[in-house]
Length: 142
Image (cartoon, rainbow, N blue to C red; front, top):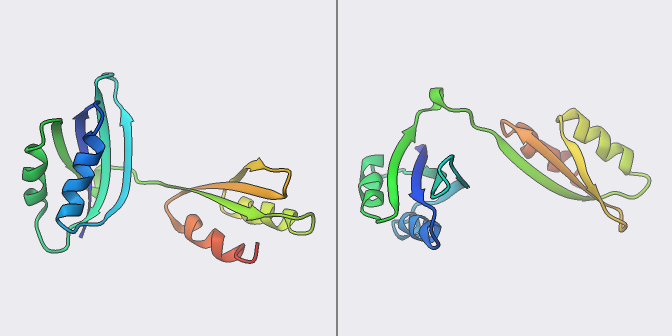
C-alpha cells in the first residue's frame, strides 16, 4: 500500500541521505521524494511516497524517529492532501513536427518551456498523472 509521509527535519547536510537510506535498507522503494524549506529557515519538509507492502507504517515511523535530525512525522491521508505530478519531456521537433507537438502539449494543458537551436523542445505537463503518462506515448516517435 502506498503511503504519503510528511517529515519535518533539521535543514542540515546529510539528512536526506540518512532518511532515504532508512527506506532502502529495509527494501522499500521510494516512488516520489520532494524536499523544501519551511517558513522556519532551519527546518525542511520531506514529502515521501513509499510503498509498504509487508509492514505497517508505524514500524517505519518508529525507525525515522530514532534519527537525530527528524523533528516530526505525519502520514497524510488521501482526503487531506492534494497530489500533483510534474513531468518534463525533451522532444525532437523539426519544422514538420513542431505544430503536432504543440497540439499534443495543448491537449494535456502543458506548455513548451524551452526550444533549443538543435530543434529540441522541452514540454512541461502537470496534473494528476494521466497527461504525464499519455503525452510520451502520443509523441513517442518524436
